Length: 239
Image (cartoon, rainbow, N blue to C red; front, side, top):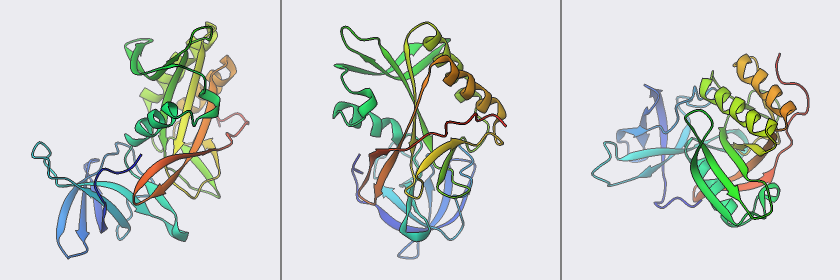
């Protein structure tokens, strides 16, 4: 997924009210940038961090910049936009770049299912069971090369796991796809201490037959693209 507008470099001052951030541009101007991320952003949003912003001149938008990337230690990068994984996955599905999900002729986003929910992608193909695919953004790293999810309590995420489990129990194909938007991780597990209910739901869903997949991303200031699969911790996640 290529950014439609070239990004500009800035220094983060603070993130506040979830969706706002104060930054200093390279020319010295202090501006407010939109932070497209509702999570806690634990370990990110560090004052003084080098960040990359996407400018816009859309009169419908209140802010002239959107925060897209953050530079990490060792030359690594993290993607900030929590909405981006769905666009990354849509592009990868259309190009057949997710091995576990190849072979489906029809890809439909945002389809109603379960109890007043929408599945991120419904994949269909004659002679194959429909695949219900839910996508989650991951950018928490606390130890070693482990990517972890979630970074705060997510009741909505727990609900999605329960609904996917019901699909799997009914004989359907249910897939939870975690997209790691940082380049310094090589494997995936849950942050069960941050949301025990989600960890329990994850274990139950996996036992019911929900497929737990994870992919990394390739991140540059030009865009973010799906990268290779990452292994998912096979141990029980509830602590």
